[in-house]
Image (cartoon, rainbow, N blue to C red; front, side, top):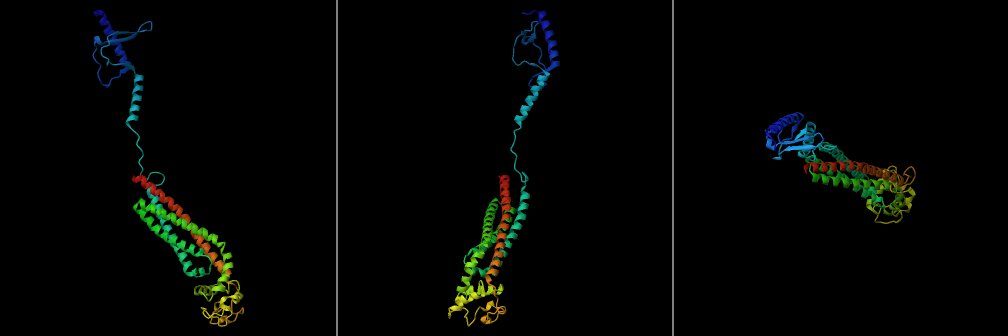
Length: 349
């Protein structure tokens, strides 16, 4: 037990130490603005060091919620770590929301690009339609003289591609304008189908261009010899060709001497012979029964196979260039349409 004098000394010494510690640090209290509790000797806990370096404790523990004295640097570090941890805890990261202008290309930029593309796509479709119609109406009569249907199939396939291109251009403008993903998906498939048609037709046209001369050499002369005067369609095609190309016969004008028209003496011929040596369409100046004479001053001596080969090759090169050249445009359209479809999906979802 302490005496009254000892208690007074302890109070004095404890007061001085508390004053010194308050100057060096601060109390870790729930609220820094709270006042220091009044000194009670019964609840005093004094911690100090002796001369031997050991620690001695005086007083009673009392309640466990008494203030703890720490240094300023330690308190500052603790407060900084606590505030940083609380800041990270109280501010969770949110996923970035997709906007119309996010990523490398904005939706408006892709829409403007697709409008430009659709204009070019629509014009290319009209060009394809014009080329194929020209081939059908002005050159299609010569197709009946060919032994295969490759030329006709390629022409009509390219015409289909042109019509689909016009339809796709209108469809694409509607889909881009209304930002409708369903229309954009259909538009992408139309572009893919047009691309395949144009690419296949273009490739076949260039392939057939290398074989057309061999085919004509094997079949054109037989067509002249066997069908002139017998088939009305092929008779008109041969007469038109001989007048347009200024030629006579498939290879040479003497070929007509071995034709069914000249040797058969049939009475059901579309154009009776009536003593002619060559058809009237072989004449330099076409007139009735001008084919009675086959002199060089009256008829053409050059065969039609040469001019026809060059003409068909020229048209096949045009069809191939149109098909392969315009098919490249569809690739850019498909890429732009897919980009717009994905960006609209991210923004709308």
